[in-house]
Image (tube, rainbow, N blue to C red; front, side, top):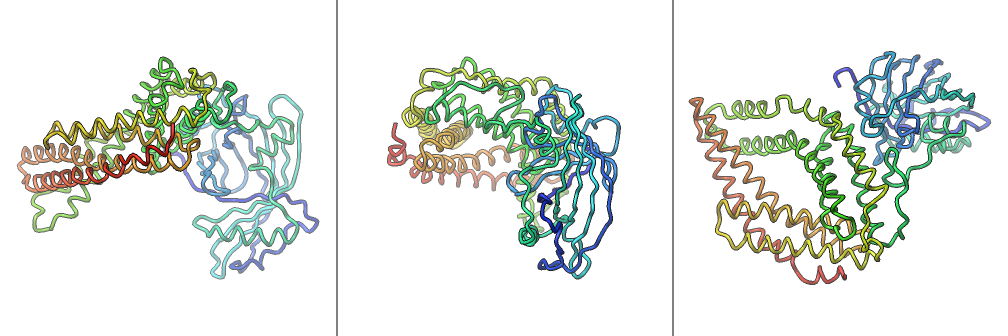
Length: 519
């Protein structure tokens, strides 16, 4: 990704049909002046698959000449922020850059990217600035001409106003500008992008995808919305969507992206196991194994990163008078040794045929799910039994772990209980749309159990790393005192979590919460 540049774009589009055109924006609060930047001619060719997979997902990929940012632009939606898209730039070239192909791989798979639309725009640009001359936003009036490139002769033209917030600008400015525009009779565009409007007006806009529709996915079986099968499939589609959406973020090494992608794999696998009476496990288990493989491959960097943060914080808490030896240097060596080459391996996994086959397998499963008889029963009848079965599994493991003496066997048993708590939590979350507050409360309590057990397991893993660091330090002739000190602190932390578990489990296992689920 070294030849690309990423930035967050927040903009709003308006139909420029008002008789007066663009009003004077100097009256907008905070805007001291409007600077005319002249007119630029822009020429953009948009690329997509033949069946418009990118457009269906509100993703745009274009090669543009003219203006100050000529080159390749990939825009990815940011659903949680109105009008926001992450834009990745690559230098101008004849063919689609490999880096950008990778960022859309989870959506296009092996399909070719071909030119679909050409947009030529005359952009009349203005800068909104404050009293100090700082750029607040760019406002442009774009005269657009669009032509299809798929062998047809369809064309269209329109004029639109675009208001784009400056980097690190105040989003409230967009509201103030919009208020001024509305007073002048200017209204928001009903299209999310120029490409979307061009496709719509030339007669072949992609249909809005149903929740979770994937590349080439056929409509699934007709199920009533309140059936167990419909609820479980909706949950599985959400997780498949998360995998596809997070793929480009993982490739760009964005914060928390790997963790969230692994969560999606775990939730999917848990749903396969929990709801085995709804979906045939003879079909879902092989996909679950592939999801386990993916989570394992993704975990190399993530687990090391979390552990390094924990050890770094632990060292920072040691009084300076006790920091004997090159402790931070030793940890840095350990960190680099564990990460060497792993970033490239992660991207290689996402480019692999095995990963793409996994995504195709999920699409196929959702298009033609292996429904069992219980899938057509009411969700309120079938889901509680599945959730409570996971609870019983957790209860057995917690009771077993707490009955053991402190030590390795108990640590292993608590780790198994942690995995069961996570599965019970995910079961409750999947059932929440159908069962409402009782399932949400159940999931929340299972999450509390999972957190205590997770903190305990983190301590177990940290102790293993500290022992390795102590051995490495000793072999290098360094003092191992600090590593031993931190090992003792982690032992104490683990013991505290075991004591906490008793109270957390007592609250989580109260019969009232389970009775509220029904079933």
